[in-house]
Length: 80
Picture (cartoon, rainbow, N blue to C red):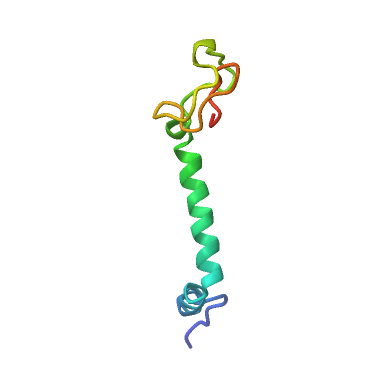
């Protein structure tokens, strides 16, 4: 006699994955989680400045290529 397998089969997982991929709410949630993971991985590239470093010469600068959201009155990068 053949032994019976206990647990789920690959077919059940595939069926569940297919039904999840059809649900817009699941896809939206997965996209948001993926975006947050990518932002966390590339955080040093997105905001390369030390948030506590004060550069008085750069105080109250507007948005620019170097400081995307500008700087505060102490010259700290707002994005960082």
